Length: 300
Length: 241
Image (tube, rainbow over the protein chains, first blue to last red):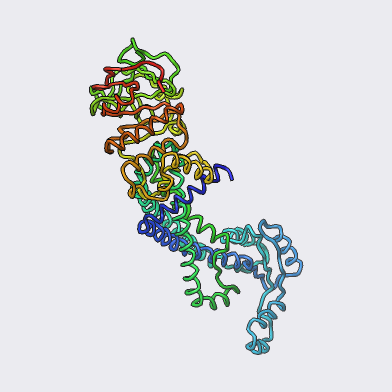
């Protein structure tokens, strides 16, 4: 092992010793970081699932062009060709009136017998337009719809644009609250971690003086304190992750079934990479808190 | 005369410690040291004497870079203290051992851990650290106390631990600030003998004391400070060992 490796082992041991030496202040820091990350993490989890929901809907987002009832085959083919050339259109599916009726019959299930009494098929032919991935948004749908409106043979347009717009507003609101809350809580947490480290520096001032006398460099003295902050933060992050998972399992059954029915999949917890980011976020808060405490502080 | 209070006594050699017209002022108009010029050769054993407030501690602090001179230059082991950057202070201090009157030991660490600190800051591997700490503790008769905590030791033993910490990385300079101030006469001689033995191994030793009996007993060079000035330098010779 190199001298650097020995030094790092010593730093880690000193950092752990520092945490153990002040269990109350260290505990307060860990809990504060944990609570911060639970709150911010809960919003992140909500946001993650909302965005995933949007992605799942996005695959099914289509613009439907209902055609005039007397549109000729020639006009229909011309219209299809024109629509295919619109930027953002991935595919166009021509649905004949008979096909539309069959689909409707299948969707109403046992009530389809009522449709047997119809003399004339009231459903018009339509074009079902799939959007390219980049256009699966309210703006994308609007752009495609605007390009189609007014074309010869077009009766009306249907899309989930209003729904998407409302949903995106809700996502933006959740994101805004999460970011705002995150900034405020992160600042408060930084102050508490900084205070913990400052108390540690004060409690160990005799040791620091002696270290300085025997030739300890600035980094030799400061690194254990920075590591202490990282360990406190990572501990807080791990606690937050555990609490979030427990809350997720507790709350999930209440809306799991409804969501599964609606979108075909249940909400999901953080992936292992995202879970690591939560813990790393805690470690980062701890590191910045320590750095703030040491900034311009101890000198040999 | 190799030391003195003015330009006449400006040092010229390549000693371990050289001071050129050094003054130190903490408050405007009030000097802790005033125009001090002195040279201490490698391996020399020197006493700094004088009453409390004479400037002995200020002079020692400047040698290990804890203070900078307000005026003049200090060259220690070839490094100019007045121009030393912050990052250059720790490497210099690893070449200097310091012993204080109040021992400055960590009460929650064992004797072994206290002594090991001086080696840990250099990244010395644990096995080598343990071996060197054991060797110096054995040399100072403390090997059986290595797992004890300082507060369970006598004053003399605590000071021996402090000396062990100062000597464990074989410093080129050993500074002792009133090292026997808290000890009874019998222990005083024991501690002074240990400090003096460092000079025999080629270490430059500077002991600040107001106990003239000790100075007389060892018959080494004695530099007397009063009011921040050198008022007497008994020997200007190369060390007698």
